[in-house]
Length: 345
Ligand code: 13P
Image 1 (cartoon, rainbow, N blue to C red):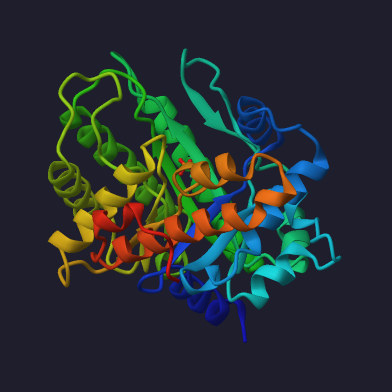
Image 2: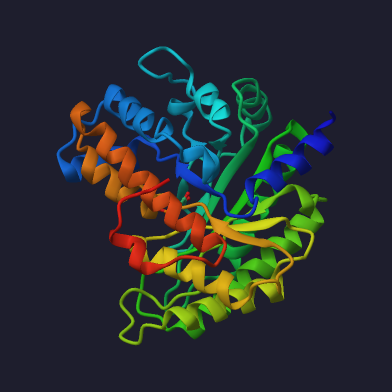
């Protein structure tokens, strides 16, 4: 199989109906911050044990198409010595890798960020392919404020996303293209919609310029949502309508699917929003809409685990339940009454 066919097949599999992606690619800093909050020791071994808990949850492969790993994690193994990429592949979950090196202050654009990590990327991609990764992630961050985002910030981030995507497709990894518009701030949903339009326009413009094959990417967008500090919060239906309207206007039909980030939404809201989109627009969309959540899949499981071996099975149950609910939402079949039910997967 050439890369062309492999990339197409991988991209399709990543957004297969009823399946989503577990984002477990927190960098050292982010992983440690979450552990610290719960009083879990911030060590290599704890991060390894935590990821083993996630990846070996019984039955999880039924609802997950992929899992995104951090550099440290893709090189780690289960306690029994099985490399994580192998554990995932055996469960039917495609291993992916975070390729960006984080968002850093953008020179000349106060309060704005640009994602770094392009230097040496071709060689890193080759190494990760060898370690079993078949897709990758790069997250660009766009902040909404009174006078931002600037065109400078949007274009710089779109350019980096396109350069990353081109290198990925050359090296055999399906690029997840993730332009995250933050929900921090007091803006209304209409402003979020306008910024999402602008950002997605710039991103697809650059992807076109760089010759990216759109049938071999997965888009990871944020949802169109009012800022967390906005007194006027939109209803679940409004969020679903605005988000789908924006994606319809901006995302070409050849893209196989969009896998949303959760971005700080509560677990239940992230699920309800995804479900509303799939329910309201069933059969009307050219691409699949699914999840690629980090916090909204992991939060409850981490709080159950708390770094204790004795809690592994309970935490895995919590994770499985959350993943199962989101799988239902990806089909527009989520029932909020099942929130309190124990998993029957
Ligand atoms: P959240 O769902 O926690 O926003 O994380 C998803 C992700 O991968 C961010 O890059």
